Image (cartoon, rainbow, N blue to C red; front, top):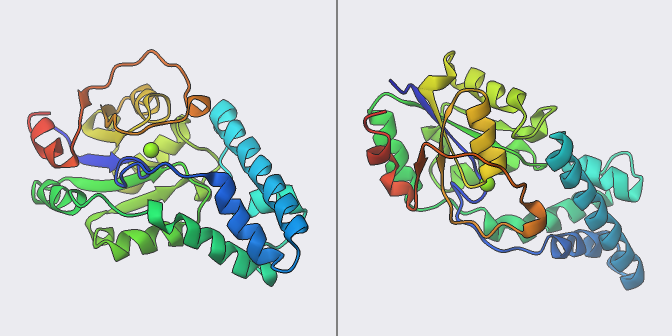
Length: 238
Ligand SMILES: [Mg+2]
């Protein structure tokens, strides 16, 4: 019997949207150096490269990171949350808001699962702070439907590291991983990671993931989902 369902966030609870991360750093750098285009352009490039390097480290070594670390790597500043960086961070966040909207099918689907007595959670590999994510989930009327949300920006590890999945199992209060289903859009991070700790895994294959972000993996999900609305039926007999 299933006791809990844990969801990936980007590309799963939020529909995939093609975004240009370099443009998000141009927004950051433009707010940081509003009167110096050359300096802003150079800072944006450094931030983008630092971001790519941190993501490569996450892919290769599953090491989690935060936005503050990216800014520190790129600009050698010790406190990106203060002073002029505050406005820059806000410009960066504003850029990404368009990609944060929860799939309209999520709320009714989550309500059905809750009615069955299932515990619900989120596990996301993200450099963004928990409060950003939780504000977006609250805006879309779904935050209260989750028992626990785990963001890798609060962890040492990203998916597919087993400790990230164990943190999510602990957070939703499930001791037997086989009684927990993980739902995600990435075969390596989500499906291979969940299955490696003994969870069941459902793939939502609707994200156009960049080739450089893909890690080839030989793993089969326990189920495939094209619409979030179909999840309650898919796992009804699990
Ligand atoms: Mg995802």
